[in-house]
Amino acid sequence: MNNVEIVKGLYQSFTSGDVPTVLAGMTADIEWREAEGNPYKMDGEPFVGPQSILQDLFTKLGEDWEAFTVTPKAFHDAGDTVVVEVRYTGTNNRTGLKLDAQACHVWKIEDGKAKSFQQYADTAQLQRVMGQP
Picture 1 (cartoon, rainbow, N blue to C red):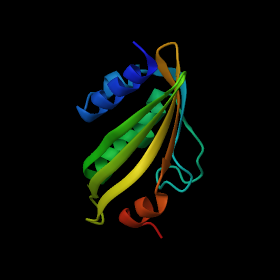
Picture 2: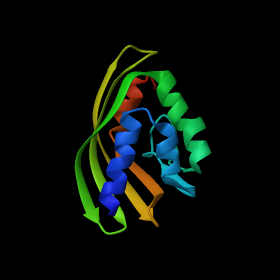
Picture 3: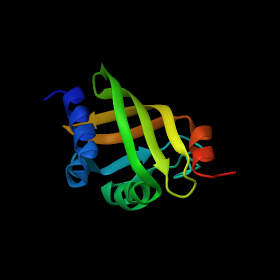
Picture 4: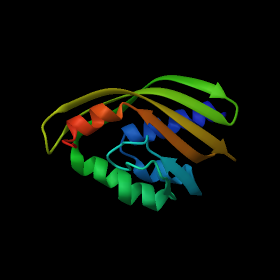
């Protein structure tokens, strides 16, 4: 399986709600970075390890959003790096506002698993929809 297929599999598992498979596709020391200014990690510092990603991000996404969806639009193969253009949609449970934002994900793959993740997103829209000042 090539790196693009590995990353496509992670999105398919996330979309179907199979979080254990997503977490199993990560290295034990994965560094997951949200875009600077993202309400889930404003400083851009990484979540480290699958358990941190689950507890500090995925669980919060499930609590904060109605029908939060990440829709991949295009995958770009750059060897051990895979760049994915995506669209985020959903309704924030606190504000009732709808999200429809473009984003880009940069994955680094090592030995068939995700070693790092970097999100680039419209953080101003995320902040507004989530009721952040």
